[in-house]
Image 1: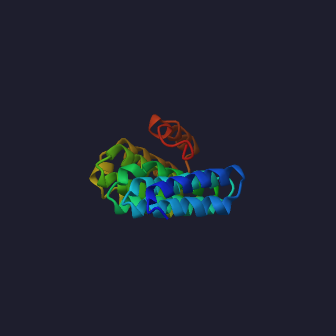
Image 2 (image 1 turned 90 degrees about the vertical axis):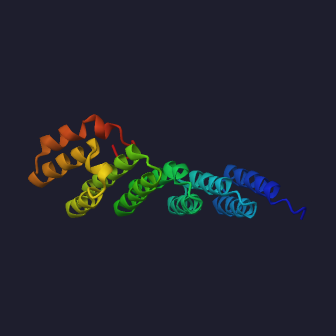
Image 3 (image 1 turned 30 degrees about the vertical axis):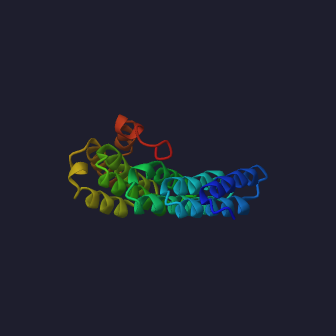
Length: 201
C-alpha cells in the first residue's frame, strides 16, 4: 500500500521463513514466489533469484520436485540477466536433487546447462567438470550410448577437448565398452573425479 515493493519483498521473505518453521510448504512457496515478483518490480533480478533459491533449499527434502522447479526458475532469472556465473550453485543443487530422485537424464541435462553457462562466463574448469559429471551420470544410469553421445558432443568444444576431464571421460568410456571393472575402479579413484561434486562422486 505504501508503494515500496522492496520492503514488501523483505516482509514476504520473513513470512516465508516463518512458514518454513511451521512446515507449511505451500505457503513457503507462495511467499517466496511473491517476494521474487516484488524484487523484479524493483528491477532487482539477483535478490529475486535468491528468493526462489531459498524456497528451493527449504523444500529439498519435503517436496523435491517443487524444489527443482524453483531452482530452474531461479536460474532462468539469472540467465535472462546475463549473470550465469551467479547460477552455478543452483544448477548443481538441481542436478543433485535429480540424482537423489534417480532421474538421471534430468540430472545430466542440468549439468550440461551448467557447462553451457560456464562457457558463456569463460569458466573453463567448471565447464569441463560439468561435462565430465554429465557423462558419469549417464554411465551410472547404464546408458552407455547416451554417455558416448554426450562425450562426442562435448568434445566439439575446444576447452573440453584439451582437458584432463576429457581424458578421464575417454578412459572411463573405453573401460565401460570393454567391461574392464578394474580399470573403471582405477579411473574412478583419480583426482579428476574426486574433485567433482560429492553427489557425482
